[in-house]
Length: 204
Ligand code: HEC
Ligand code: HEC
Image 1: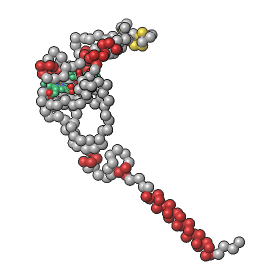
Image 2: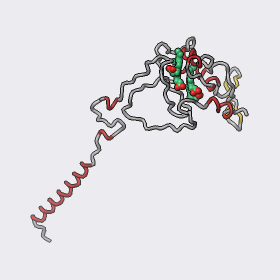
Image 3: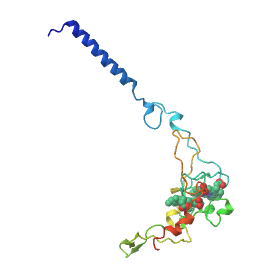
Image 4: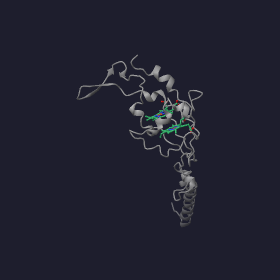
């Protein structure tokens, strides 16, 4: 068979056309930088759209701030008031207890420290002078004795380890999480006061 120069030429043109079309298709599908990641802004500028608002914590002194809605049922509440002069918490000075101690909290308009903070949830152990051994109930695993102590348990002393202030600014990436509270008042109140003493006692 004789392939003429003309036929070869036509074939090349046709091929180029097809390849060219495919290339155009690919460039149409290019993924933009803005569509990658959560920030939805290009990576060359650090604008407000990228950062969200400046982090600014509540400046209203305790007693004049507005409580935040709890993030989920039994979440540790965020601190709404100014912390100026209240931190750091030291062994000799825990300003938080001064207002949140259940004995004074109602008079101060503060939320009382809940029962859970007066219970030691750490597994019991024995100590023979050398080794700590966890007390094990073969049916129930490690034993935690649910007893309310008159004083705050050590694990709850450092309030700011779990309770943090919350900024009121807008986020660059809005959270779409919606809490599904198990109780009607779940957005403002923890349920632990009522349930822990009955449900978690591993000794019974
Ligand atoms: C001068 C008294 C006072 C001191 C000191 C204080 N608080 Fe408060 N706290 C309040 C009051 C009153 C409220 C209720 C909101 C308001 O009125 O500002 C509150 C609210 C809170 C809340 C929110 C409770 C809820 O139900 O949502 C948390 C958490 C909190 N404080 C933690 C702390 C921590 C941690 C410290 C120590 C770093 C502290 N507070 C020190 C008086 C105080
Ligand atoms: C180990 C983490 C942790 C530490 C430390 C801690 N808390 Fe909490 N706190 C929580 C959690 C979790 C909750 C919600 C569940 C509950 O009520 O126990 C809570 C709830 C609270 C509540 C709301 C109670 C209610 O009835 O709604 C207050 C007030 C509070 N804590 C104050 C304090 C103060 C003051 C301190 C320091 C003396 C402190 N907490 C230390 C984790 C902690």
